[in-house]
Each structure stands twice: as structure tokens, then as C-alpha cells.
Amino acid sequence: MYQRMFQYVKDLLLSYGDEAGIGDFPFRKRSEHIKRVFKWAERITYEEPDIDRDAVLTAAIFHDVGYSVPYNGLSHAENGAVICEKYLKENNFDAKFIDLVVYLVKNHSRKELMTDRNVPKELILLMEADLLDETGALSIVWDCMSEGNEEIQSFEKTYNHLLDYSYQSMELNPMITPKARALWEKKKELVESFISHLKCDLALDDGELTGIRL
Image 1 (spheres, rainbow, N blue to C red):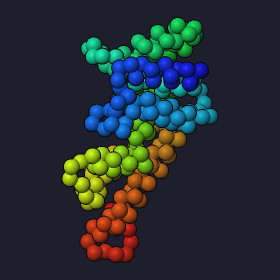
Image 2 (cartoon, rainbow, N blue to C red):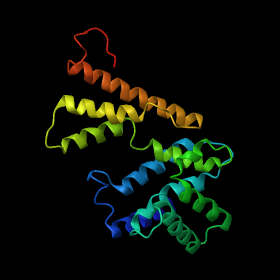
Image 3 (cartoon, helix red, strand yellow):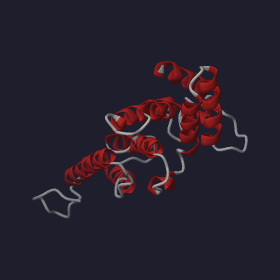
Image 4 (cartoon, one colour):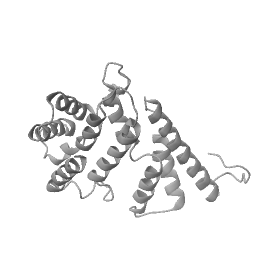
């Protein structure tokens, strides 16, 4: 079921040319982001009580499909909700299930709702899965590949870029559920450790050769 959904979404993105890269980063692919968000959703919803797990996983697949629609005045989340609803209805999913998934897709970008106790837990989990992607190790790789595209390159310049992006992006933990918060903290520790070691390797530690710290 999920594989068919994913292929449907990927084909739509390809038809619009959205698989050529995201923004100024040719190495980023929308469908790859979707696949990773789906995997994060699987991880953080596993054995999570009192939720509709299928709804979260389905919404993870459709959450960015709205980028396949040429600009029409609506957000990608709103366009994605329309596409998602059409697909689910055509494939005879339950009406209550459709309503929940469409709601999740339509609201997944409203990250301010993460602290709203009145929103369904399914929406919190979907937004957490979305935010967990391209952080930690993958963020470090992204920063390095981004710097590799620059005309002027240096190790120290890349180090400073990592401080400004990968390090800063992990400073505050926006996760709500315990499992997602723990995952974020592990990612943060990895980034801090990598940057600390890089600082030492580049001899940017003001001559302090004992201990590794930011």
C-alpha cells in the first residue's frame, strides 16, 4: 500500500520537474525527503499508544506532494491535501480515515501547533518526523556539500558554516513526544562532537591542546 502511494507521489513530483533539486541544492530531492520522513514517522510511532499510525504514515507520504502543483495561490500543504483526498477517495479508503489524513497534510507546516494541547497527537508526530529529517549527520553532510559548490572553499569556512547552520539548528529541541526528544538530543550530541573534533583538527582552539570543546 505505502509503496504504491509513494510511487504515485514521486511520479507527480517528476511530472512537475521537482526532482531536479530543491532550491539552490541540486543534491536534495523531494521524494528522498518524503521517504526519510516516512521512515522517521515509522520510528517514532512504533508502539505509540492511542494513535492512528496508518494515518500518520500515509500523511508522511503525501505531506509534500503539493510541490507538484504550479503556483495557484495555495500553499503546498493545501495543494497536497487536495491531491491526497482525491487519491484516497479513488482508492476507497474509509471516510473518517481520509478526513484525518487530509487534516494532517493540510496542517503539517503549521509548526506553531506543536505546543497546542488541543491538536491530535498524529499531527504532532507528523511534524516531528518532518523536522527530524536533514538534521544531525545529514545536516553536516548537507553543509559540507553546500560549501563544496562555493567558488571559494576552505576547511575553516566550512567549519564556520557548520556553526551557523548544523550547530545552530540543533540548539533548541522542538520535539514534544519523549521518543522524538531523545532522538533530537542524540543528533545534537553528534553534531556538537563532530564540530568540537573539527575545531581541534583545524587548530582553532586557541592553542589549548588538551580537551576537546566548542
